[in-house]
Amino acid sequence: MKNQQMHDELLAVGRKIAHPGMILKNQYLVKMELSAYRLAQDTGLSQVTVSDLIHGKRAITMETAMRLARYFETSPQYWMNLQNNFEAKYYEYCMGDKFAGIQPCIAH
Image 1 (tube, rainbow, N blue to C red):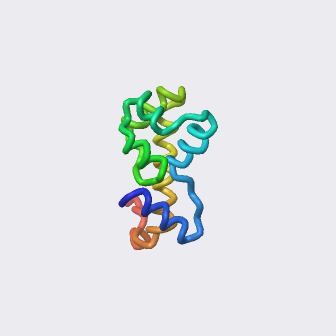
Image 2 (cartoon, rainbow, N blue to C red):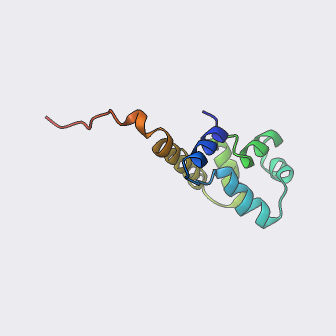
C-alpha cells in the first residue's frame, strides 16, 4: 500500500500521524533552509525520490535512511523508526480488525 494512501486513511479515522517525509521536510529542509533539489544532489537520491518522500508518497528505505543519516548526522535507525512507527499506527488504527481474529498462542 502506498504511503500517501496510508496517510489519508489515518487522517480519515481522526489520527494525525506524521509521515516521515513530513518530518524530513519540516524539521530539516525548512529549518535548515535546504531545497529538495539540494538534498537530492548532496545525497545522491533522485529528485523524484526526495519529492515523493516529502509529499508522503514514498516510504523511507534502509538505503535512504543511510543517506539521510550520513547527511544530517543522525542514525539510520532514527529514520527507520519514523517509518516503522508510521506504518505501525496505520495498521493499528486502520487495519486492526483484520487481525482481531488471531488468538494468542498459549504454551502447552
